[in-house]
Length: 246
Image 1 (cartoon, rainbow, N blue to C red):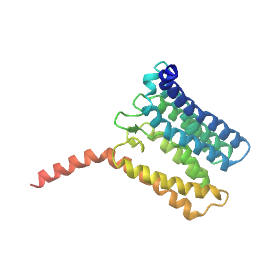
Image 2 (image 1 turned 120 degrees about the vertical axis):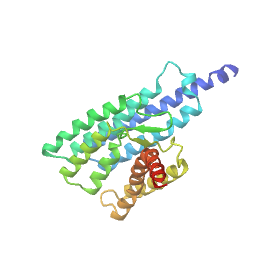
Image 3 (image 1 turned 180 degrees about the vertical axis):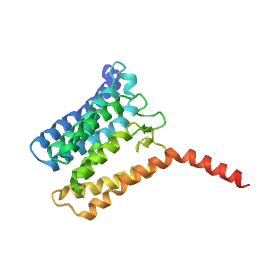
Image 4 (image 1 turned 135 degrees about the vertical axis):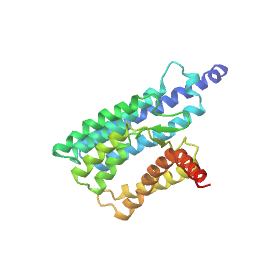
C-alpha cells in the first residue's frame, strides 16, 4: 500500500499524458469522418479533441506532471496533437468538401506552413497567459466557412489573411489562463459551447439565428485580444494627449 502511495503521483502524471493523447484518437476519428463525407461527425470529434485540449492543462498543472515525469515532454505531445486537430484535419476538410477551389486551393498549403511556423515558435505561448500570433484556430474558421457556405474566393482570402496573422505578434487571450476577465471569458465560452451543441443537433439545416448567435464569442475573443494588446499604447497616447492639453 505504501509503495502504491509513493507511486501515485507518477501514475497520475502518466494518466494526464494518456488523456492528452486521446486527442490523437479523436483526430483519427475526425479524419475518417472527413474521408467518409460525414461533416457533422468531423466537428463532433474535433470538438471532443478541443475539450481534451482545454482541460488537460489544468490537470497537468494540478498534478505536477513536470515534476513526476521529467523525461517526458508533455508540451510536445500537446503540440503534435493540436497541429493535427487544429490545422491538418481542418485543412483537409476544406479540400475534401471544396470550401476552396481553383487558384484558392493554394491557400491550403500556405495555412499548413504558417501554422507549423506558429507551433514551433518558443514564444507561441507567453508566461503571462497569452498566445503570440493567430493561434491556429483553423477548426473554428472551417466550421463557420462550412455552415455559412462562404464563396471560395472569400474563404481563400480569409485563410490567407489569418495565415499572415500567425506572423503578426499580437497577443491573443488564452481563455483558461489569461488573468484579465478570466471568469467572464470562461463563462462566455461555455455559453458559446452550449449554442454550438444546439447547432450540432440539426447540423444539416441549422437555425441561422443560432449560427449568428454562436459568432458572438469568436468576435468577442478577437476584439478583446486586440484591445488588450494595444491597450498599453492607447493609454500612453491618452496620457500624452492629456499632458499636451494641459
